[in-house]
Image (cartoon, rainbow, N blue to C red; front, side, top):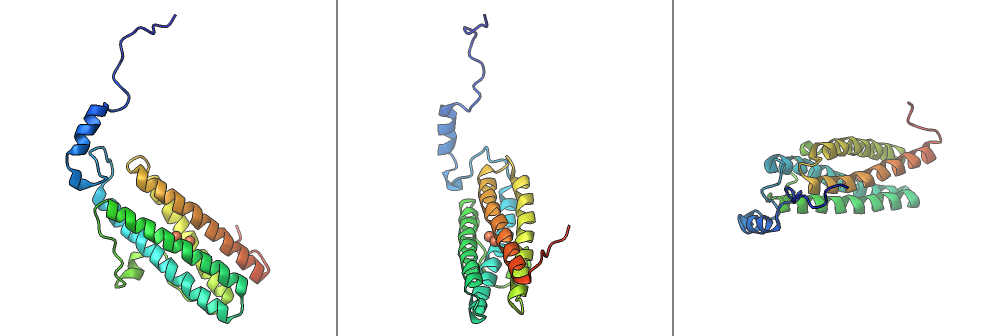
Length: 191
Ligand SMILES: [Fe+2]
Ligand SMILES: [Fe+2]
């Protein structure tokens, strides 16, 4: 019944010879090939802001881990330490991606807070620290979800990286929420 003998139509994927030929051209552009549908400049600009957000998160959690130790809250300190480590991994991933796209990751401390989406707020006590971290994580979750939608198919590599980071930020927000409930004794978020 159906004509299996019909002529081969246009290949769905780019012909391998064309791929090879294109890959040899413009090798100075590294991972950026002609099919990249994103705006490289804009992507780098967005990622610089993500990088700043992650650096601020590393600083805040590290500071909190040190301060929490003073308050003899070992389990909270450990949680802050773990988050600081994971934020540092995000920071590195984003910096590497900026580099892959041909940019220079901006680690300049000057202007860092204004480039970051989340704020650096020192909590006066343990509950305040947890609360500020929860707020920062919620900002990151919303911001990164928006970026995942923005990159979509235009830049799948950056999107997948942001999806991975987003999953961790959601876990962080959940961890902070649990800690807040544990230390405040009541659900802090009303709907
Ligand atoms: Fe992060
Ligand atoms: Fe986080």
